[in-house]
Image (cartoon, rainbow over all chains, first blue to last red; front, side, top):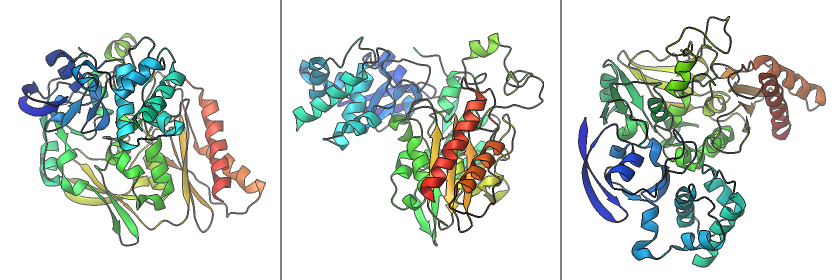
Length: 155
Length: 312
């Protein structure tokens, strides 16, 4: 079965007919061409597909597109309106939080969710918030440093 | 594009009665947070015609005082449960909730979903082509249990963290079904069979969880390789009672299990050694993970004794 959903994606209202069995990650990537959100595993294990739904970090690979009906969805593309890097993106760039880059969109969205709720997180809180995001390059030290630097830059 | 999910119709009932009526339809299954169910759909481990999304049912929401105890709606999310001020009196429960998966899962995963979490096994939680190349297994589509080929039942491990944490506090469940409502003690909700570990009849649904006043302090300890995401290799919940400790296990058997240990408390090494031995005896981990069962048994018993010392 298909149904019409209406949601906000990166501040833009979108109305679309989607089948019940379409995953949000596929909707974002295939229908809206927002390919910044990555698919890294076969279901909820790696965090690369993390997006914000109503401001909270969620895994778009285990979320149905129809479940986002009426919600505000934010992806990595929403971080840089007008091409200017967000504080988190700038911090990841300056503190080498990005290695191969595949996990970065998920890391940044999980960190964005953290910083909105807690603008001055401790290292333990950053580790907890990013606990579901895997970096295959194992660049965790610099990722944590980047999130801390973004928090300081935004203070 | 990810593997396509099987074709299903999503239904979002507003009441328990509507949900029960819908669940009575052929091929209908419950969808709560979907953090495990949708992965199962992707792997061909579930092929529902209808998914009944219980997220809009008001009766299944909320945490509220009930006499001296607590009522928790089955659709309460793990993140709400972990930080609820009333639930904090049951430390094993909030600790177990906070230990499950990662923040992105806990934001949607539910307490009812965790109590009904499908049993897990190295030979089961795999892609369709992986399982097919292994002639499937006894739990689903096959005839042999690869963990215990000479046995006649599925050995998959129950891996929910909340069940033992709630069991040591004497939790009961309210279940709605085609025959009406019933109450069951959580400890009697499960049976030791990895392929059929729940005593839910077709069309039944867990509506709420009920806790009496806490008898004493409690804690939950979890054995795993990483501190996040991982399911428990083994987990143990302990609650201090007037007499001693109530202890329950997860990850070690095909259902969560109360440990048979009735020794009256005494603050000496002999007591904690006896407690450790009792946990070793109750735990029956199988080759359902890549980590050796022997290690899981010894480690969870040691963790139980350590946690008991801290609580005593």
